[in-house]
Length: 325
Image (cartoon, rainbow, N blue to C red; front, side, top):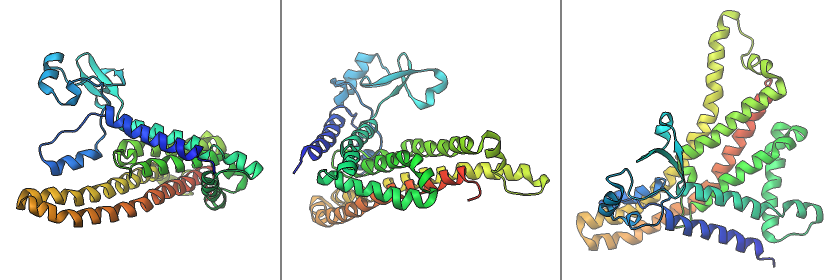
């Protein structure tokens, strides 16, 4: 049995968790119940100094009362006009990397590792069990998701994008279930970026296939001339609302599942604080049992949300290049 791919995949996941654990800034809150929910927040990647480990007084002295306790590990300077997108520092504003980017890069590496053998397997019929497994997923996406909606000729042109978006979301969602990791799709900014890519695909592909003028003209159905300006605004809003729904759905489902798990775990601290340590220990088996049950459900939700996002993206892009549909 070929164990190279499983070992490489596990190494990528373990490496991402280790790197994030070492360089991610730790959120601090005096309330242990609220501290749990801070795990859903992106954590800035910082350089390992004494200040990065919570010595705030030393950090303020070292930075002269600056804006951060530790310097960002990866940062790009930002102009003042883009200040809301970054973080204030002594020399201006910066756009910094977080632990979410670590797991996004890990997801990309997993795509190359786990799907890299599929072309050879389709040509020769030889491949390890992981290659056969993910080949089945890829064939399902092609034959049961893309081709029935877009047709074989058109679907094959757009298949690489839909395969990429499906496995990218799937791997991020599944890695988010591993202890010590972070779920990038539980950030509205990540799901917003994915939805923006789908919106760009809808507009650009529609304009390329139909023509720039024809795309915007066919956006509005046959209506009286007086109603055309109003309907144009309505259709443009509808064009934007479709990927907006993708963004909110993916974000809400991944965040909601994690919040339920953390809420069950938080019950241990709640009973411990309000009724004593004995009550906290007594509640632990029930709270952990429910949390594990939700985690099992979340493993299914991780796959389901990748499927829904991809399937709706297929429908939306197809509707843009074929307005009659």
